[in-house]
Length: 147
Figure 1: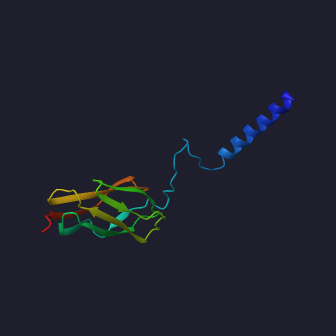
Figure 2: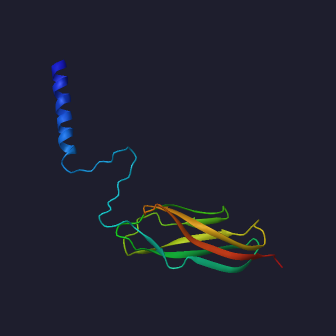
Figure 3: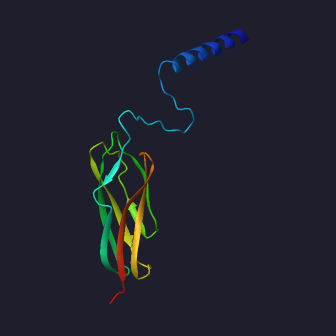
């Protein structure tokens, strides 16, 4: 019985060794994502880097959708988008964007409780680009008192 177990174990090891030398690419660490870079990494190119809402009344909620294009060579996947402040909420596409295709990141700004005057907020994007963290577009406005 012990000899049978050792024979099976040796066979499994031999098969595993053969499979690792046939050109397959296995990640070296658990949890590591392997990206096919033969086509080039995905790239985000925004049509506009800054949107100015102009003057808005304190308490007003405004939104703008930034158009972008995947100008890279492989599918773009946005993992996360966040703003420099909790008063600004970005919404991004969850599905991959193919090379050459366009999509939108919608940014909603809530001026409630914000001080009067000029403000600017930046969107930070985490994606499968190189580098993976991108300083994205910005919004700005001047918050004025209600009349």
